Length: 186
Image (tube, rainbow, N blue to C red; front, side, top):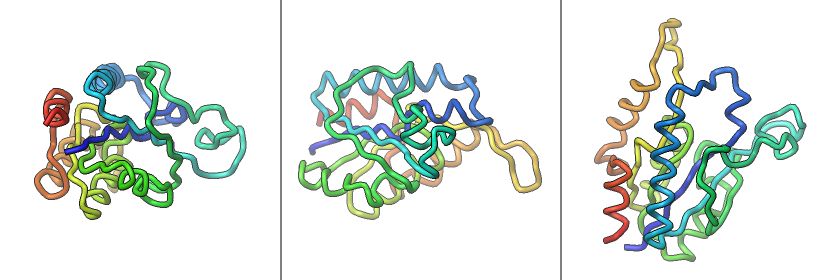
């Protein structure tokens, strides 16, 4: 089964957001880089997706004009099989990624990147609904603490656990880097 790794929104734009912290960044970078290295070694194509949205001004971190729509500094350098820009949560809306996947005979996706519960989860649900098998590599995703409606804290770890619970066996196989790479070999 032909597999493709998708690295979603692993970009410098997020460092410009007030919620950005380095708390979980080292673990995420280690996992994401291990996944990239493993896919390169296996010959699995890697697709890069950047989020580009909002006014086309240097002051908007998600505009190309800002200079922040580029890979996170700590991210392993790799030759992307393709690069797409999105302005929706799903990487499959209006980007041409779905066409590229079909043209390249991709049957299974490994989803990784930023944010766990937003663009990574939404892309996973969308891909599953369109018929792709999805390995959701939870340790190679990153998010930050949020707040419940009542203002109480919602920890990033809890967000990741919730995402895994709602995707598991419905939209994706939840896996580690090692499991994703083992599945990519078959």
